[in-house]
Image (spheres, rainbow, N blue to C red):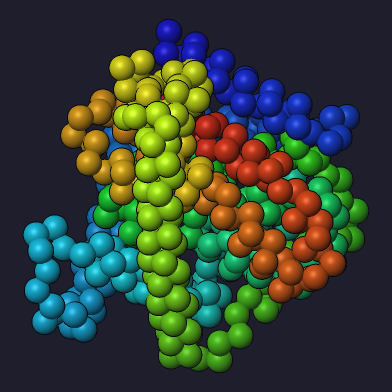
Length: 395
């Protein structure tokens, strides 16, 4: 029964994307089918085979070792602080972003990541028929945040039509940055966070390709990675990566303060009118029907829906912090589905971040991206639902 509900959820999700499509005649059904098959194979391999479990445990162990190294740096600077039991979220989680951002910056300077991303993206393009820039950006979005992923293709922005802009923006919005994956792993089970990365890449490309199909002239279908970084040495890359990581950590901290405080304010207003009711509970009821189709147990769907809704109206960190205390009370399947759903930038604030980034690259294109608005968020939410549903089929 769960499998049938999951299949129905996939059909409904892709069907809603179809209804949002602005060019139904040119949808690449073959490429979408291939990517859906890839998702099923990846999830089956990771969750249902011993080798897959060994690989994902190995990757998780690698992240945990990097977290240990990062913690050494944090303790050197902040070791004199005495904190309450449980630590301080900013110290124990957010500051790790600095170390992870440094590693990414060095790997980018050495052309290791850009080369891997370029050829993996090229392989996806060849198999699915998607344009190379869109495929490259989809893979690039696994490793880099919204702004960084778009900046990496800035030299080719003049080629991007409105539909192509939608696809690259949707990929950026439906992904996460590898620099903050370490922070996520500190809050939720690593295996679900790591599986969400490739699932979101394919889901974003599938949903966006339905909503905004593209056909690209051969002379415009290429990827240029020659100017992905302006660093002139490893040490400059390390320094710039550390500064960028520090900026991200402070931004996340500032957003958490603003969103959590605002959420409390909204709940205070709601409870003044409807005693005992919170925004989270309202969102839980709204998302309950799709949550059941995704595979969440009816007894858990209101709580799970409230977490997913919180992510949409605030951000994934706020939702993860609310979900963390519930991990011991929910089933493994619900934990997996919700964790995958939370692992993306699909929320209202991301629209502004993406539009602002595009404005810095090409002010004329920024107006087009701003016009996407709710359509961009809608596609990103469908992406999260699709990824979480695929994960639920194998839990």
